[in-house]
Length: 102
Image (cartoon, rainbow, N blue to C red; front, side, top):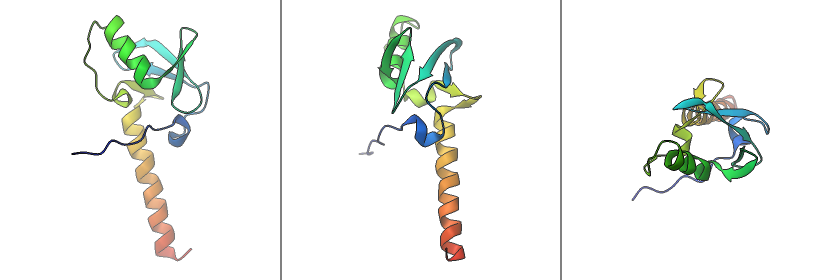
């Protein structure tokens, strides 16, 4: 069985508080990043998972959705791709440090 990855916090992927993320399927749907993995939408605070579930149910009339990081964009980059890119960059830096003996 595949283990679940812990929730990514926005600051771990270089997205600052008060930044705006856009919903992939409708860029007019925007949320404001808060601390941790929370966002603000229509003056209410949600986890990104909770907000994505609400949008799928109430706006897209669907109960089925996948990882919320597949559904949101920041600076033109889907969040899951951003997370993978940043994780890869950090790993490369760590390997370079080990290789250089620092």
